Length: 459
Image 1: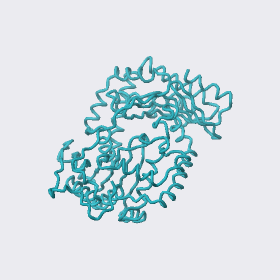
Image 2: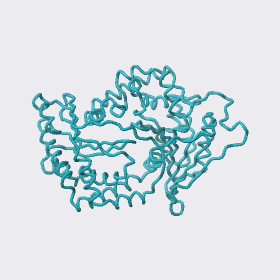
Image 3: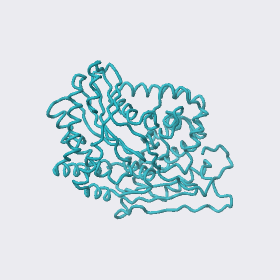
Image 4: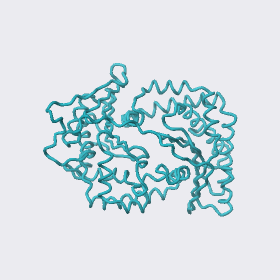
């Protein structure tokens, strides 16, 4: 994708500029909340949501690559590359990149997940052209120099150490490994000390060229923006880098399933001298495309999504056994996870696990009450809207939707889907998901007798 040729134009050899295809995906009232999409020649998709009432804009580029796309020896390469794209291009040094956004009070960052990576900047609407130019330059012109790889290696190793020092975070990586084993979904996004130390600049460059082709990218922008102006600026930036040469290329389809194998009834304990024991009890969940995901969201909210949830009430409010206890879902292209997390004193681990397991079993066999389901629907609808009250959240929604689903859904449609969930649907998904044998991951200073009893929680 990166080109250093001054002669590259990115235009068709015939001299006629290829035509972009523009669609209106969601029509907002008076143009507010309107989502438009343009597919540029070369397969690059640009999606925007226009909100004239705000004075900010968030610009992001989503890459169809995550830690799931790594071989065992490349574990951590996606995240490593995320760091390196901030280290300099043909046009800007690392200091130039950071100071450009700092000078206008903007924010810039990136994140790597199992199935995608995102780079973004949030700025005043008047500074959007600068944000577009800087982020596009990073994505198309990264140098990935040997010396930058060596310097950033130290920063990434420190990030790994920081994560390992936070058992409340680390236990979720352990749970992924418990469920998926040495599958790509079971390996940590950051990689390990050994894999990060083994990665070379040449291997990372090859990984970059393979996965950062325009057909693998989605540009998303939300706020007080003009769709046509964003498209023109993005196209100019990519053509300047020679990144849109193949004008016949088409965007790749959303990621398909792979029949990932998940564990049942497995227990993993990582002995650490921590003040608390950190546990995740869970089982296979739903893929992100599963039609039952709306009912699953309601179930998750009722079980462990707030202060009125069953787990919070039973574990914390009634018994004071944990300060933090919650449930969560993670959906991937072909599979998913449902988990219950709790942090408690080591002496209370078995009591906490017993209560959590009892609640999951009870809901699996008896379902939730109509009152609980109605409350969860209201909570989920409210949190969905409140979570989309800034341009960054809106950019995330439209970018991820295009990359992962290939379509957009309006907020009203999302709220309607949640409101349409019936008690029978919630009880059905509860039987299917919670009725499975769970697996367990624990980090903490458990004694031998305590550790030996962990299997009781998954029996």
